[in-house]
Image (cartoon, rainbow, N blue to C red; front, side):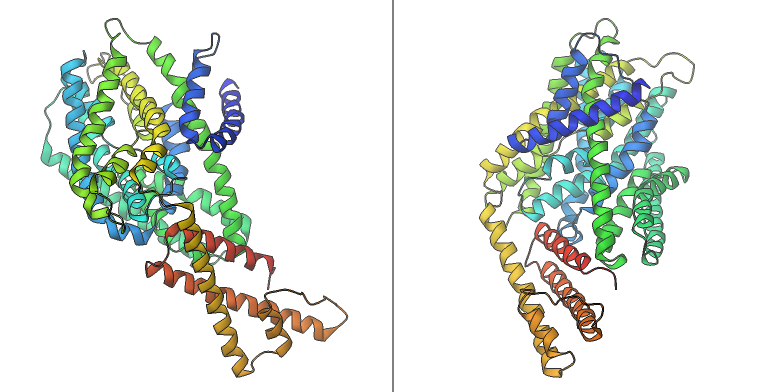
Length: 514
C-alpha cells in the first residue's frame, strides 16, 4: 500500500512539476529528480527500495518503445555511421575510463570497478529523449543523439554481464566468449524485435477497434522485451527494433481515428512512467547513502570526477565525428560536438543495471563494493540529469545550432501551402473528368467555408454529403502522400512532418466513419 501511495504521490507532483517546467522552460526530468531528492531529505520520509525487476520489466519497455517510435528513419539512415562508431567505440572507451578512475580513487576492488565502468558506459534513451523533446535541434543532430542512446545498449549490456561474471566468480575475462555473447544479445534481440514488429503489423492491419488497437500498442513493447529475454538475447534491443520498424509504418497500419486515440493513450502512459521513474532516482539516493559502509565518505567527489571523465571522454570521441552531422548552415564543428556531448546524459538504464548486481558472490560471501557502486551510479545519474539537463538549453542556444521559431514556422507554412496545392491540383483533375457533382467540387474548393445542411429526409442532400466526405478523404490521402514525398526528399523536418500528419489525422477523424 505504501508503494502505491508513493507512485500516486509522484504522479501528482509530476503534474505540477510539468506545468512549472513549461513555464520555466527547463526539462521536467531534471526538476523531478530534484523534487524527489528534496522529498527524500525531509525527516520522516520512508525509505524507498524499488526491485530492479520492476524497473526493467514494467517501466523501461514502454518508454524505450515510445522513444524508438519517435526516431526518424530518414535521419537514422543519414547518421548510421557515426551512431555505429559511438555505440561501440565510445561505450568501450567510457567503460575503460570510468573503471580506471574508480580503481584508482575509490576503495572498489578491480572487478567491481569494471562493473561500475560498464554500468556508466552508455547514455540513456529515456532521459535523452525526454530532455531533448523540446529542443529545436537540426534533424541530424537530434537523430545522432537519440539513435546513439537507443542502440548502445547491446554493447553496454554485454560489458555489464561480463563484468558481473568476473566480479561474482573472480575469474578472468574471456574476450572471444564476450564477443560471441555480444553477437547473441544484439543479433538475437534484433531478430526478435523484427519478428514481433512483423506480427504486430499483421494484427494492426486487421484491427478496426480503437480499444483493441490501443491494447495492442501497449502490449507490444512488453511482448518484445519478454520474448527477447526469454530467448536469452537483449530484450531492450528487441523493444527498440520493434519500435523503430512499427513507427516507420504507423501511417499504413491504421486509420486516422485510431492513430489519434493510440497517440493520446501512449502520451498518458509515457508521462506517468517518466514521472515515477525520474522521481524514484531522486528518492533513492539518500537511502543508498545511509547504507554505505565506513570508509566511503569521499563518494561525492568521486561521483563528480566520474561524471567529468565521462563527459570528457564523450567530447574526445564526438569531436572528430561532428563534421559528419554538421548542419547545412555550416557552423564550426566544435559547436555540434559540444551539443552532442552535453546531451549524453545518464538515466534509468544505468540505475536499473546497477540495481540488478547480485548481492553475493558464487562462494556465498557478500559482494564487496556493491553499495558504493549503487551510490556512485545514482549520484552520476542525478548529476547528469540535473547539471546537463538544466544547462542543455543554454548550451544549444549559445552553439547557434538551434532552429529559430521563425524558421520552423516558415517551414511549416510552406509545407501547408504545398499540401493545399496538391489537393487543389487533384480537384482540378477531377473537375476536368466531371467525375463528381459540381456542388461537391465547389464546396471543397471554397475550403469548407460553408457546410451543406444535413437533411435525412432529402436523399439528394445525403448523397452530396456522402460524396463530399469521400472526396475529402481522397484529398487527405493525396496530401498525406505529398507530405511523405516532401519528407523523404528532405524538404521538411521530421518535426514538421509529424505535426502536419497529426493535423491531417484530425481532419480525417472529424469526417466520421465511412
